[in-house]
Each structure stands twice: as C-alpha cells, then as structure tokens.
Image (cartoon, rainbow, N blue to C red):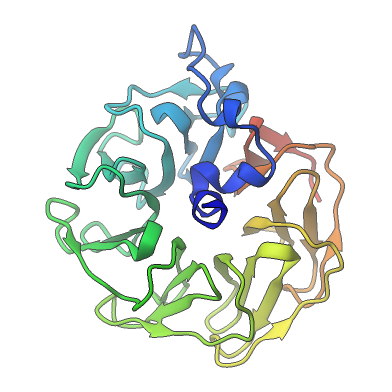
Length: 314
C-alpha cells in the first residue's frame, strides 16, 4: 500500500507530510491569500500574466501578480486536484481524484466538470494538451485517457502492459510527448499520442517527470535523488552525480537557463550547465514541494505542503 499511496500526487508527499494535512478542512475564510499558505498545493502553471495552482479539497488558486496575492476560484468538486494544464490565457484543464476532469474557459476564474469516470476510485495525476483539441490525462494503475475534441469526449486506452502509476506528462519543444511513471517507466510519443514507445533506462525506481531542455536533450528525475540526462532523446542516459538520496518531485528550467529541482523537505538542487552536474541549494524552505513554477515576473514559486512560497533567485 505504501507504493500505491506515495505515488499519488496528493499522497506523493506522504514521505514528508502528516495524514492530518492531507485531509485538512478548508480555511474558514477561503477567498483570501491565506489559502495559498494553508492549502497543500500539488501542481501549477504560469500562463500569460497569471499563475494557476491546484491542490487538496478542490482548491484552485489564481494569482495575477506572480504569487504576491491569490484568489480562490469556485470549484465544482471537493476532490484533491493533482494536475493542471493551461493552453492559453483562457482555456485549461485540471484533473484529480474521484476520476474528475475540470475545464475553464475564462483563465481559471471559474471551472466546470467536463468528465467524471464511472469508477470514483480512479485517480488522475496529471494532464497535458498539445493544442485546444488534443490532450491526455494520466494516473494511477496505468490510467490513460485521450481527447481529440477539446475534452467533449474522452477515450480510455491501455498504453502499458502493467498497472504502474503514470505520474507526469510533458510536451517537448518539437511536440514529442513524454510520460514518467513507476518502476522505471518512461514513454515517448512522436505521433500526437497515437502510439507510445518505452524509453529504456537502467533504473527500476519511480520517475516523477521528464524535463525537455532542447529538441533531443532530456532530464528524468525521481526517487532517491536520481537524475538522468540524455542528449539523444532517451536512446542513452547518463546518471547525474548526486549524493543526496531524496525524492525529487519537480524540475523547472528558468529563463536564465538555470535548472532547479525540488521535492522532499529541505532538498533543492541547482544546475547551471543544462543538467550535467547538480549542487544542493539552500532556500530556507523546510517543507515538501510538489511543483516549481517560474512566475511571469521571474519569481520562483514552490508549491507544496506550505502552499505557495516565493523562493530567492538561485
């Protein structure tokens, strides 16, 4: 059960969180900036001049000033929300537990249920879109759904033989789609999600994401401080030296070119050479991080156990 629980984003920080935080009641006055520092936030994205963040209890937060203040959007569900994807300043999707997919058409100010699966025990962990029509939602036990009509209909498919959790989906600069998951699972699609090819590695632990740096340069990261680097789109990998054996949940390449990794409490790493080497970075934040987002004004935001926290420049 520990493997299953810790792989769900709302429980992926279970290695650093207490159960009471995972099921905490919403604040008494939720439509304030205080929600951003009380909620467990699990994913986020900067788009245009806004930042959208999602988390437990159906919380969806929107900031128009790079994280200085936040507003809580009305949410149609109370389920934990684990992933969000905005394709432009107006349209986006959020996914989570209870087999739910939400949609917004007004920049995240309001949301509606677009899909709810028949099995309410199913959990989505992430969502990604190529354009306004083509998107994918991934999750627990190999859960994979795709849409070709902007989410009006979703079709479930099996893309791996095992029931491994699919933790994160990302799109590279040339449109290649990547999925990272349990037991060394890395997948690639070069035909807009029609087919998926395994990307082999020599690691059998869980991956929590692939960060594309260029057309063929990738970083894959996950458990025990593991970071792998590829310069040939995953044909071969090199293990990046890192002595700190901690869970890495997120990675972001800043506009400055610096790559930042974050995850388990107190564990941040910085690379200034496109991931060839990493070094520990002290931020002062001692709580778990699920996602790192560079805000429109360049502020680095850590989303996680402490809500939304502005970090110093690395």
